[in-house]
Image (cartoon, rainbow, N blue to C red):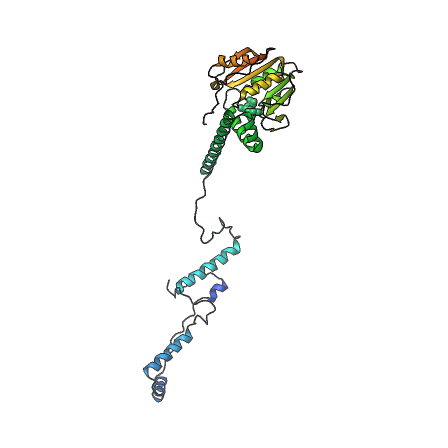
Length: 344
Ligand SMILES: C[S@@+](CC[C@H](N)C(=O)[O-])C[C@H]1O[C@@H](n2cnc3c(N)ncnc32)[C@H](O)[C@@H]1O
């Protein structure tokens, strides 16, 4: 658009002010005036070239506003651009008068803000899955370490370890709980079903009770022992020495809890607190017992008569005994192997 084209300004006053001034038609000078002028020119002394140039410059500079004179910075862009800016402003003013201001689609960006694509919903859930997997694997690793510790140290050492840092016990039990979830059956449920059928006056001792699920599931008096008391039902102790009097218990339960390297001491303690004729019930991981008959024989030496053996479960062996009135012989062989849970 050249400077003579009239842009589509609309009827806005502000816009009209900026319209270019109309150019006046050139004055037609008469011959007389011309001769007068030339005379005057001759009478005035001639300026040298430089003076003339300076004057011209001065004249020019008074016509155009200098940056200092101008209320706004001198335009560095051509008039065409300046006009189109004003044109846009004028148009916007017109539109604003009839339409409400538009909400910005998104918050204005900081100057140095980069266009980082936001993660999609799918990517977000993938990341969450990955974090969960990593957490699981860390928790699983912690569980396996603690589990191995329990199988390779004495009950006394394990008790000291968990007493100093009970959070280890919680880590162990959350790992154990995830293992149990994947088992087709949980031995403690078998014991719960059995106890429920027993007369209510039977006194139970749950050696290595964990969270005392058994006690919470039956109406009987249950003494629940473990290394850490995770709730009020549990008495914290090393089960090689439980706070019970001799011959006060009817049924002693070991559900996957013959863990320490001195597990014979736990069985010996059960013998002490059991009444003669009292029951000893054991569930143990199959892979720990190389030869079930050998294990049963060791228990016989300790004063327990075997009554029942169940090897039908693919993961566990269930063994039942009755405390005899024989004098126990605790010079027995350790035949149980440590149990190692597979990596998930
Ligand atoms: C594999 S968990 C089984 C828990 C529970 N009996 C069940 O079947 O859900 C074995 C439990 O025996 C406990 N335990 C191992 N050695 C122990 C000891 N010397 N004295 C007391 N508790 C012990 C462990 O702390 C653990 O809670």
